[in-house]
Structure formats: C-alpha cells, structure tokens
Length: 74
Length: 137
Image (cartoon, rainbow over all chains, first blue to last red; front, side, top):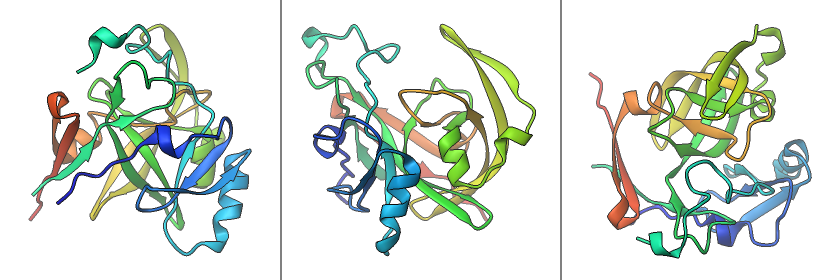
C-alpha cells in the first residue's frame, strides 16, 4: 500500500485566501470560495467526497516551527 | 495493517524542511457531514475545530456555554461538543472543542480522541507516520 501524500504547497499554489475543496485522491483542487459557504455551494455539483481546507493561512509563524532554518532539514 | 501517510508540505514552510502530519477526516453530526484534513498533534490534549466547521456541521455552538482554556502563549474560548468521525473505514465518537478565531490549523486531532482510537507511530526520519486503528470485538 502506497503512502498517502497530501502536498499542500502544490495544491494551494495560486490560492491566497478563502477555502478550497480538494478531490478525494488529494491531487487537485476542485472548488475555491472566498468563504467556506461559497466553496461548499460550488461543490454541490460534484458527487464525490470533497475535503475542505483553508487556503489563506500562513504556517510560517506557527509555534514551534517559525525559527527552523535550512540547517534543520532532515 | 496500518495506514501510512507522508508528512505534508505546507505553504510558507518550503525553505524550512518542516513538514506536518495531516490526516483526512470526515466529521458527522446527525444528518450533517464535513470532510477536512486535520493536523495530528500528539501535544494536543483534545481535538479542536473552528467555528466555521462547526457551522457546516449544524452545531449550534453559540448556545453552548463557553469555557476558558489556554495554550502556550494564548487564551481561548471553547465549547465542547460530541460528534462522530470517520477516518478511512473507522468510525468513532469523540468530544471535540469548537474554538473561536483559531489559526492556522482549523482542525486538530489529539490525545483524547484520535490517540485513544489508534496506535500512531511518527517516523520523522522517513517523513511519514503510520496509524493502526484498534480492533474492537
């Protein structure tokens, strides 16, 4: 069984605000909305399960990881 | 047999090498369901969702008396609710806290919910984690 991969850098590229709806294989963004309500409304035409994720968040200052640099690469 | 998930790259952290353990989850509250991708946080005592996610689950969180909580560096208001969750084929009920104004992660699963349902092995050297749900008779 291959590991599940969810690459938010690729998925959220070009989306700087709002919410996205991600396909069930986690390979593409199917819908975007300024708000979660807008995104879920746009997703009504899809029959598949859609995973919603905020697309305007910055994670660079999240506690515990903000001061990591290249020297801390695994 | 466990489920193996690669740690996820997140926007803004590309140059740091920092990756995050993230897991797809569907929350269910009566006839309402909402799917998102949660941070798996061994440092979180309990799971949290944002108010907008609670709204999508038709949780009337404003009617629930707020409690005060704290984490490193901040205080917050939370409202505990009981809902169900589905991760892959595993269904379980959990108490989760609705928190106002949270960022950057809108959904976190922690020790009192996900970690009580599964063995989770973080393998940072492989940049992945494995989750094995408990079998119940």
